[in-house]
Length: 281
Ligand code: ADP
Ligand code: MG
Image 1 (cartoon, helix red, strand yellow):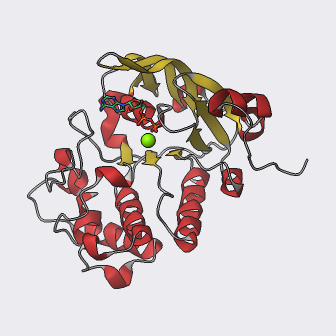
Image 2: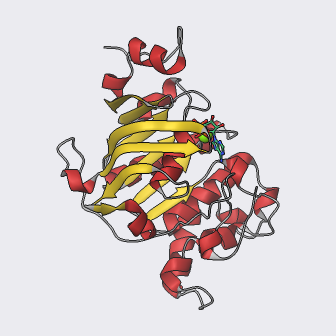
């Protein structure tokens, strides 16, 4: 079911099971750009499992997502990539634990900006670029209150950052796929979150938009944010990622890109022989 709503707690979509999405904002975190990050600053996932009725989508997933590292969730179609993100955000029921800074992540959803897969957004909804990005400010400003000068400035800067200023008054349905993805990136930026989750942001977009999105991701990680991106492309763009979580209904491997990208791990995840990008030693 696709739903888009102006109410902040019903932002833009429901997942296919009909659970309510919750999104939005808050707080800056210190810059931590190495593997020795204090463990509580990372998102810690332990024994996470998800069942959709009779089907087991994920089993016993254990991993961490660190600040300051661009982290990719990779795996074949149906591997449970989107499910992992939704479970972390409490959008689908799960077993196990997802903690951030020593507390359940679901109790801190205001620190998260989430951009779902394109297919879960109703692009016919009559909202302009400006409307969509300002929705990212609702939690900060208070619903039905006038948006503050600060919020307007933050939204304006976010729209500028993704190169969409000239389209500010355009309905989102009239934009190209790449432009739409930039608008949702701007909305995430306007939330001033600590944790950013994007599900397949590179599907159906142009090269220029892909470059802009990676630039913004790198800026966010350089500022110590947590940036988690579902992707499936094993091409050259994989070198943008610092850490990987490789899934196929269970965790195949996790760690730095080089640790994870082995032929053995990839064939366990994707089955058979896999063509993938190899970096010069
Ligand atoms: P991915 O994002 O890696 O392609 P998903 O997380 O979307 O995979 O799906 C994992 C598995 O769970 C798939 O087999 C999919 O069909 C199933 N699934 C996903 N969402 C639902 C749902 N709402 N109800 C039932 N099954 C689902
Ligand atoms: Mg998916």
